[in-house]
Length: 197
Image (cartoon, rainbow, N blue to C red; front, side, top):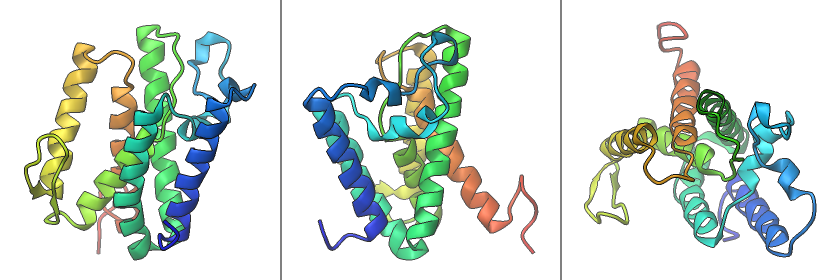
């Protein structure tokens, strides 16, 4: 754990500490979930703070494992500052996407979890290391990172459009992918931000 790069380690430890506080029933944490704009509970800081809350142990473990797998690798390439910028832009775009979908659908439910940031890291990993082999848990079939992200994105879009697995913020996941993709395109000077020289 303590050999991980510092930003990745700090993100994981922060989420674990907040989850322990949730488990102990600390009052006021609901103020930090991402509430829909029309719900009466929305506050601007929730665009970031929702990513530190989680809905259960499996939710936390899955997200922290992804942060460990992809965040540490990207931080070793980019450094801590750039990783944090990339991660929180993904979190922010995921939040904005979720708010738009909630406004359209009339959903009153809050959103929690680091999944938007994780999906941003995943697309960043696939753009930097497109041919690196990934073995997902289900199905355990090795595949290049770019293919894994495409398949996962299509599944999330399908589940979001059909309303399958209610209670999962599929469009926030897609927003995280979009945020990560746009950030890396911006850093590279690629369309839609300009042309690489």
